[in-house]
Image 1 (cartoon, rainbow, N blue to C red):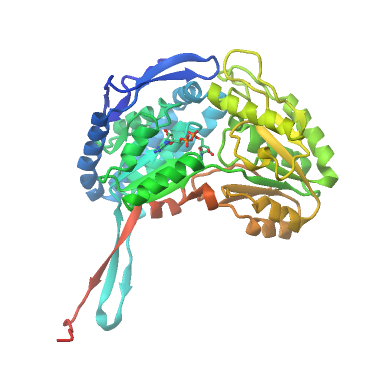
Image 2: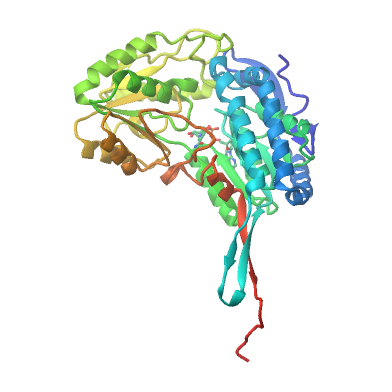
Length: 484
Ligand SMILES: NC(=O)c1ccc[n+]([C@@H]2O[C@H](COP(=O)([O-])OP(=O)(O)OC[C@H]3O[C@@H](n4cnc5c(N)ncnc54)[C@H](O)[C@@H]3O)[C@@H](O)[C@H]2O)c1
């Protein structure tokens, strides 16, 4: 497959290059080889993108929702038709196994385009009757130019989860992918244009944090949607506040998963695997603090270790590979450093813990038991395949410990006690909760965090609120009274 894109950026409906920008090498995580090179956007490229977006937005917003939606739904169909190639590219960009990318990336992006494409024609205001025959009507209007800034773990999905609702509402989009995974968003832009999206409405500019910051601070940008870490979120939120811009913040987590002693152990182990080792642990909503009731702890750990033995670690392009490399040397080193901290703090290493001796950024899926709440591996987001298993005995105690974190992205509970399951879900301080499952993210349901994990929601009808605004129009049917 040709991994070198035609050019670094996609602006005004076409590929654009400016080799003056800082060189960014794209590294295939499975081998460490450079598979493409792009250039960070220069100020001239940023200017071009903002001008293109502003120039195209008003006419797009003036089209009917049905027309806008049709284009998005056509793009969804093209994405599904090209799922194989898009999945291979996603694997080159991120290192995630094709087994995952073929079902969770372009397919999820297509779902967002289809869902919001269908919704575009349903976006309306309301009629509010007042006394004396007067009335108010509301108009749901676009925000203008929306900037999306992506993390590296789901480059296609993030480009679509931000782009689809923004476009459905009549906005123009400028998307800056993570500098670690710059390739996939360009394909999303190409497909949208092929589906009939007028030029300038979905632009992709490459770059590091400084390019993101220059977009966030530009007065011509109306909204910023970031997927990234909490420290970056604090900076971007603060910068956006200066311009009183709308924001969506999809940030990190250290989510709890509670396994009661009446749980179906096999399902709970599956949930813990999905919530810790999918995408080599590089998922924001992962349930990395697994609280297991003392009564079933050893049975849970034994079964977990047996199941981990069956993971197929290897070439991510091979269909049977179920666990691939980390995205980068840097991210692997961060995770290995946390493993060293866990051992130094006295946690019991029950599985993995080592780098795998082969090319690329491979490390073992890792499980620590006997982890206590104060350990660094139980408090900080690792963003790697490192599970911390903690003991508990009492429901009230585990609820308080689960919530004792600055984060609030996700949380899960495994139990067969119906009322307890809902009591726990109600008690979680988290935006996205799971009962007897973990890490589902269908487009129909709102996704996002509370506390330091974020502001706003992606997916579902809720996303519309974050990509549009209401205008109230007051209508007087009679004479206007005034005091003098
Ligand atoms: N809640 C979610 O939906 C979600 C999904 C995926 C990942 N994440 C989080 O993302 C993090 C991992 O991704 P990452 O390492 O790419 O995150 P990161 O915060 O390092 O970078 C995210 C993006 O922000 C850009 N950026 C950095 N500094 C900036 C600045 N000052 N102004 C504007 N843009 C700036 C980066 O270039 C990148 O595109 C984890 O914390 C993970 O939990 C959250």
